[in-house]
Every structure is written in structure tokens, then in C-alpha cells.
Length: 171
Image 1 (cartoon, rainbow, N blue to C red):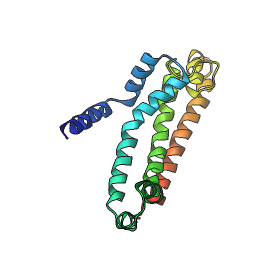
Image 2 (image 1 turned 180 degrees about the vertical axis):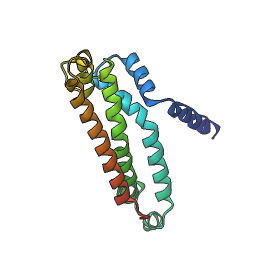
Image 3 (image 1 turned 120 degrees about the vertical axis):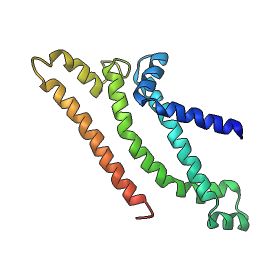
Image 4 (image 1 turned 45 degrees about the vertical axis):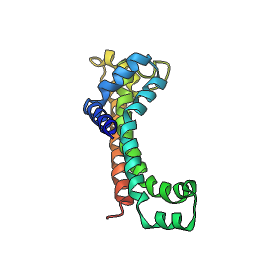
């Protein structure tokens, strides 16, 4: 039990660092590329998703319909697939919608720094990095990729907020 709490503290300590610094560190070790950037974003989001799945599963496990299914003789696998998993999907979908804006910003930042997707591949961070040389002559080059990032992040934030309101059973 003590190891579980120590691991929990380590995860809390890792989550206190800004995500972009951890992503830069992970991609620096793995090397530049869009696959490594996606892997870094997945590693950064894994603690939040694992905690949410565990908390949702523990909350659903003690509900009456799970006890009734177990009393009827359903196998553990069937209880997980038919009863526990459908009740855990709502919070996971909301968490995914909340994590997408952060992932967009981290990927654009990594690409801007040259650690994400490399120049032949399209990326808003690559576009901003290329437009940096032309800022004094024409700011339009940087305006549209920056505006696209802003609209995507704000739009997904509004979508996540609406999804959370729609899937919250207390409202």
C-alpha cells in the first residue's frame, strides 16, 4: 500500500511541471518527428486518463446494478463490458475533449521549436516558424496560422464545455 501512495506522489510531482517542458524533454530524448511528439503528448496525458478511469470504475463497481449482475451470475468480463464500461465512457469523452486543446498547443509549440513534425509535413507550428523570418515585412504570414491555432483551441474548449454540460448527470 505504501508503494501505491509513493507512486501517486511521483505522478503528482510530474504533473506540477508545465506540460511543454516535459514534452520538450521527452522529444529531445526520442528525437524530432511527429510520431515522437504524439508519443510525448500521450505520455503527458496518461496520468489524467488513468486516474479518471480508475475513479470511474471504482464508483461504478459499488453500484446496485453491478451487484445485481454479479448476483445473477454474470461473468466479470460481461459485467465490465455491459455495465462498467458504458458508465465510464462519458467522463472519458469529456476528458478527451478537454485534453485536445492542450495537445494542439503542445504539438504546435514543438513544431515551432523544430522538435515536432519536420518542414515537409504541414503543421501550424512549422508555418509560424517559417513566418518568423518575414514578420517585419509582412505579418500576414504569421497571422493566419496563429489565428487557426487560436480558433481550434477556443473551439475545442467550447466543445468540451458543452459536452461536459450535456453529459453531466447532475445538471
